[in-house]
Image 1 (tube, rainbow, N blue to C red):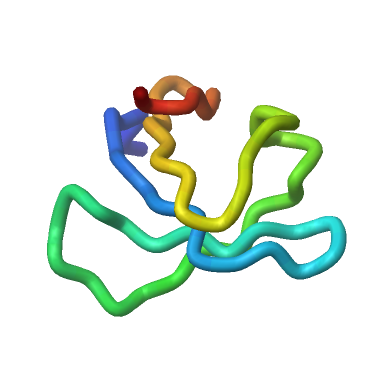
Image 2: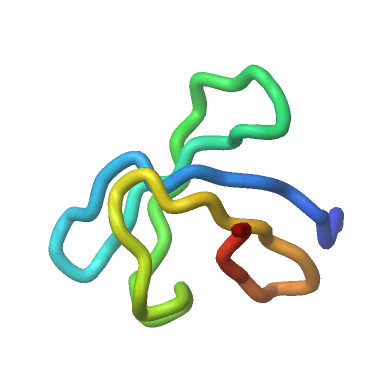
Length: 59
């Protein structure tokens, strides 16, 4: 299992879920993540880093 780090952009927010898109590689795959697992201040376009089962906002 690969623990990252990976970088994502919040593509859209859909209720209790956010759709993430990889930004550190070229990929058309989207990842659906429960918003409870993400920082509460995310919006569409927010850049995130995922590492060791945790998401953090990139400045």
